Length: 266
Length: 172
Image 1: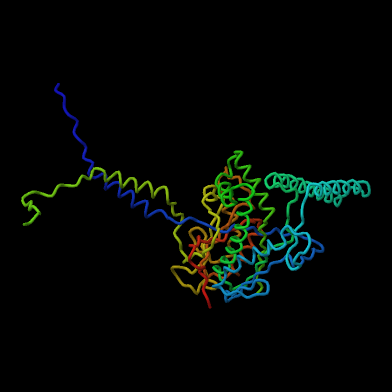
Image 2: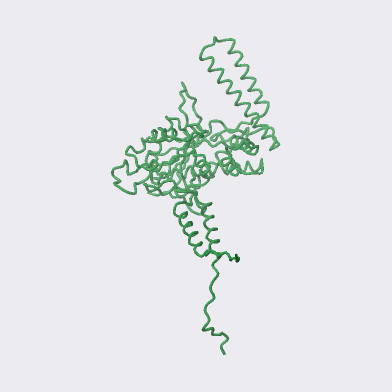
């Protein structure tokens, strides 16, 4: 049989098919990413007589129904909202690392050292022991022991973080902000969502900038980069994910983002 | 004098279009990679609030750890029928109970997650996609309901703000 040449396939309509697919994808998909501020709703805890929070530890921001903002004693107009950034940084930094000559209107820092934590741990153990001898074993006793165990675990965790901090910075003491220090965000029932989110944004931005600087100094990588990597690779159990998690825990301890969102009354 | 030759009689040379499909396919793949599929059609008008330093929810979506609630003025139908003129959209419906339905909805959502879903209930995020003029009172009502049902993680949706632009705060 004579050899026949294979007929060429006409590819002229290939472009049309590709265009059709392209347009289909253009229509069914969206370009914008979903982004949000992740927050936690606090758990309800019953306490008999709650401890009073000192005024210096609160940075109160309230937004009224006309989207005017009050930060501590000063009024900020909506268009000047960027002022919040430097004020929140000031709140965190003014007493940082200072032992005396502190500004009494802002949260104090304590310098945490290895000996200090060891002392606390041994104290907790001692307390537990004496309690064990004194009281008969009932439900209250169990609760107390559990509480002490938690406290010891917490101090041990801090000890680990401190040793990491010392290794990275070369300093023996770690500045830790008062545990009560927080930003208190109040709003009205009629406050706009956009104004509320704008204030959240300013708080987040200020704290993230502080964290980034600290992280860059300690580890040579920004907090933002680490948290992005951590979020995407959360489910993988690689050493780098663990390492980032530990580093982020340290930075979180140095610059905690604590926002209390108050339910509006009017 | 004229330096231009008149080439009458000759046809314009045809352009070779054999690489056109390649170009279009390249575009197609770009869009397939750079975009995400639309999950639902919005039934409420949402002009997003803007902010800096937002968390990207894409990894949460991939792990299906986040459920979205849409709040805003209804696109169709009577605004008067809804409390304060704000309709709440759960998946494909505008529920008549508004925000008070959120507890039950979230409960159902959580129960219908696939079997391999491992995140505990307090880490399953509820993200509010609210219009910029939605009053905060509604969101705090939702927070309370979710808190009582121990869904402790929430998100305030906001699109990333351009650097030189201000926040979208409406002045009064």
